[in-house]
Image (cartoon, rainbow, N blue to C red):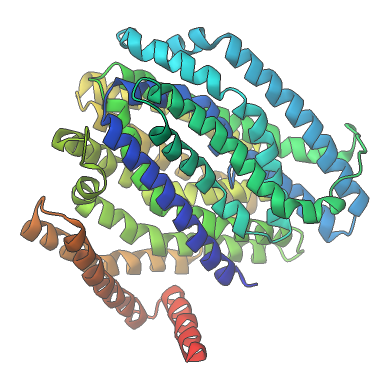
Length: 520
């Protein structure tokens, strides 16, 4: 299966998964709006759900990335026994380590929640967050198993289950909302999240059983050179994710001191942003990661490696630039249609849009940054991403403090700080990569960026014009009309790219046209 075809399959599955995640947030917003219960859940789920299940165990997370990076090379060299030993040793060590972390976090839950919250955070919010946090602590252990299974399935080119399994986590939360009473519902949110992680792992195990014979030998060798290679990527990557979580804690700390609902508004905005961003990163990086790893062992002066990097960058630019434009221009209308019901009122919509606009400014840089991180992992260099993440703590702290304390931007200030940190991180990684492998950014990639920016102008004009006509009357029928005409404008933008002889657009459209001819 080609990279483009694989990316298409993963994109569709990720789209389904992301829509379920969006629906989950819509239901939570309908029940709680932007009140203290939702704020408490967000604070409590930061580490077990946001960090362990998404950042550590998720696709493109440390476990997935390190397993694919090291094991794919051993498989290419046909070292079956080494593969089994490495996987078994990794599983035992990871499960023990993550279990210890879960137990420590359970015991020190009150101290951790107090540390993550600003001094003026309401007591009711803190107490509820402590209870929810303890319920979700076993997710640390589950994250190790889910992350390793993601990596194995990716190597075996099994994409269906890994891309679709997060649906279980969303469904579990939604069901918990409706089978619980109003009195138990706040705690049921945590139980739904916990059960969702168990179901996610269970779904992963179904296709994994078919391939276990290639990865299990019950041979534990902590001194195996493959373990050193794997942990050489896993530990810095894990620490980088931990640093990323520290940034989330910084945002949570500043947000918890703002008016009630600020954290909830930022979270809702991030969920909308992650819909296009998550699909792009999952669809493009998952199939591209093994290709990057294999191209590093080709002895051609990194020519193939640089070519693959630029292919990834151009694909991300092609998708992320128009996506950012749509979110900035039509974000408020989208939020109103998706979330504004029940306890989620017009003020919640306005607050969420300000956060979304601030976050969308860095969508392109976010996507390219994540690609460059994987490039360094393919080079067996996890130190640069780690040091870059450490530096981001300073940037994030200064950004949040400046935008909130000095400029009084409130929740939108957190979003702007995130955009600045993301842009700085991408720039540092790009400069560091040039020092590592020489000039890597091709002139064609920069030309592609300028063409895409030009071709996106009609999209911006259309979105702004549509908003002026319909304003806040963005109902589902109007949204359907909006989507249809946006598709027409999108075709026009691609036509502009073809006229400008953009190879990325020509390649994609030619393949689609061939598919249509074959289907006829």
